[in-house]
Length: 444
Ligand SMILES: Cc1ncc(COP(=O)(O)O)c(C=O)c1O
Image (tube, rainbow, N blue to C red; front, top):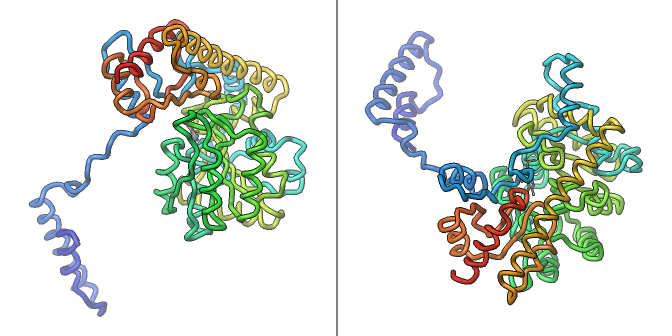
């Protein structure tokens, strides 16, 4: 027990015998003074709080900002930039924002489960407006704080209602998955995903690990554009994953952070989620609008729960609300209103799809330019893995030493796992990056 607590403990006395009120007040007050003096003599109460390491992803941006070299390039951040490497606010978002301002809404709290029109359009976007499951009330939705907050509420739900169940995340996975589940008190295990030999999916390793996972485990699946590898299972492989989830009674927990960003098409990118839901699997799905609508800082997203029937779905929602109430009470309003305007209005929705295609298209273009340039500069190596990968990222398979060379010598900032964000690359910087990559592979 720390000193200050020990002092308080002994000053309070051990027994629970009632004391006359005046005596109690007097003793408590002198104990408080004594405690205050002791704490003052000891120094800070936070003395034992250790310095936390920088976040492995957001820390990269901090280091980038501190670098004064003009050639510097930030490929660490998972946020879209235009070809001038500037952040982008979509035109549809600007239009929706104007509408929201004109509505002169009040600033009252939303219900715990969020803005109902937002929940409706979000569930339709994920599962299809014509989904039988939606019509029959088997899917419930909680608006939450973007993808991370939705995952965190889901993690708390797993911890409370499936005590002892392990959560299996792919190896590698988005750096925050482990944090989120571990912080919620859930045991985290990994299943194989990446094969460094082929720089592709280790599907047999993945299936073997899932086969040996205990029945009833929770399995995190990236809905599309797996982060960090950019490698997704094929349709046939998804079917095998579905079969094993069914057979072993796993609870799939889909993380959908890139719907529309992987292929440029919202329906294609929801394929795996819809296939699992339509096959009758119960599951959780987190949904983020950070990337596809560029609402990063608005923190807008949702957690969906798909249950066998309406009764189970409703009870699950009641408990999700209870968890959200304790975590942050209720979600923010503005982002949800913007999403409801864009996704719920046929005209803005069409415009959004066009803009999303534009973002996905620019990333595909620089991906191709990078591969062409690498092939020219280093024809003896194989670079096609970069164009085989999809979404925002490329997982280069670089070692720690190679990543350090990229940053220390070439001022190219990327995560330590060798991931580069192609959303942060402009066509003007392709050659510079290709030189840095070739130098790092050849000389480190
Ligand atoms: C796989 C994955 N899941 C979830 C998120 C959560 O993002 P946000 O909380 O900004 O919606 C991200 C963001 O990079 C991600 O890559």
